[in-house]
Image (tube, rainbow, N blue to C red; front, side):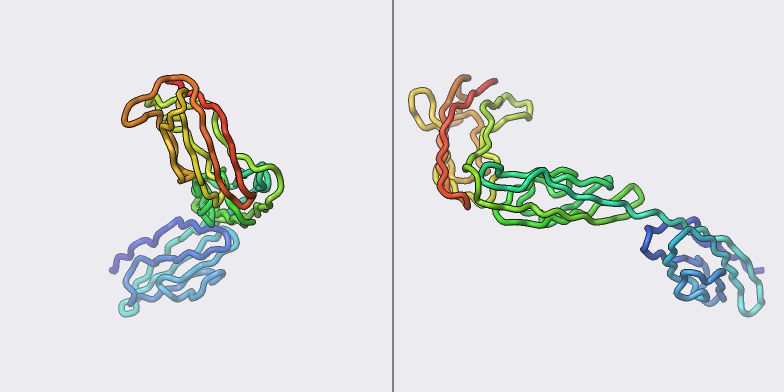
Length: 250
């Protein structure tokens, strides 16, 4: 008597998706899947099922020469698709240079386009773009099922140009606030980003908006206290100049 292997069961599939059933035996055997509901070929060893609800199939496998046969039950569970929603805190203008996005409905996320986001794989990335942009987020739930949501962030050149900077930083090696710099703000062109000590000596300068000062000068840690910064830049909002005082704290 032939021994038949049990087919894989149970199987899971996301709503509106397909799953391949696996007869798990020699392809020379005869197969009959009952019922034929949702199947592309009920006599295939490995048919594809596209169920709209959970279903149980009975599989009859028979050996065509000696007519040995066995029947097995295969359960297919259908997991509902998540409902993913995307939102933004605000549109962007010269006074609000960034917008926090927020996705819900999944356990993990991927945003596109990723350019202009501080992290395209978290639920609430910060958007910093210079043109109106529609962001699409794909959310995945605990079953691996996905859904997408979208949100548009409108960019205008209204409002008063500003840079968002902290007023203090703590380069003490704890991994928090280790560097003083400008938050990303679209496609700005930094003409000057400089820091001066109390005697007016320039101890840091850069033209990269992502550059930051780590509290050292020529490899030496600088004293705690107040320092002056100067920012000159051009952006879609026009020319920007900002000066201020920052505190170095250890």
